[in-house]
Image (cartoon, rainbow, N blue to C red; front, side, top):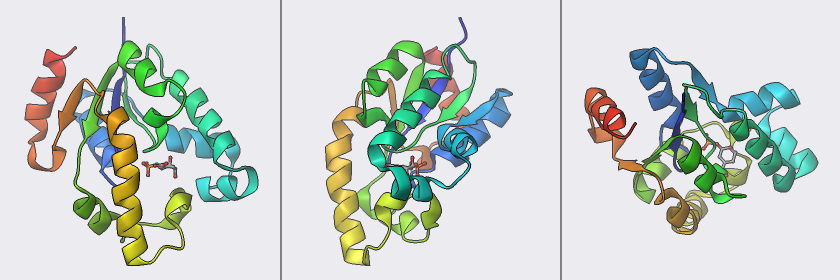
Amino acid sequence: MPKPIFLIGYMGSGKTTLAKKLASKLELPFIDTDDEIVKEIGMSITEYFQLHGEEKFRELERKQLLKTAQQNAIVSTGGGSPCFFDNMQWMNENGISVYLQMSPKSLFDRLSQSKPNKRPILIGKTEEELFNFITEKLTEREPFYQQAHLIIDHINTPIDDLIILLKKNQ
Ligand code: S3P
């Protein structure tokens, strides 16, 4: 039965970039659940959060995740996705989950350069607040991320090695 490969991890850990590379190398479709949500709601995630709040966003996120069932695709998920409902368990039962682990310092370096329209929970923070927020949220989310089938340091792992790992876990 076809099954998706879910890339999970904190905002800024490079899920989308790696998912696109893997999809192209493996000749599989690429799905970004955030992009699917944006297509459905017709506005940015930040606007949606401001209008309807995080809880409604998490419901949309869940719905998009469930749509990936039985698809032979590389799926880039939102950073919070594994931590709501039973999403993490669902991903593990319906596909292969891969945690892109990264230190708070590396995440901070990457996120301090990123655009805010996709990441409402980071808006309006000073550099110090951002670093503290990343550290706290990561500690809170780590128990979910750690449940992944594979945990990788993708920045220092050649893509062909990742593909070998993925094939072993299929
Ligand atoms: C979120 C991460 C974002 C997006 C939303 C919430 C989070 O996705 O889903 O802003 O709670 O970590 P990325 O991880 O792709 O940035």
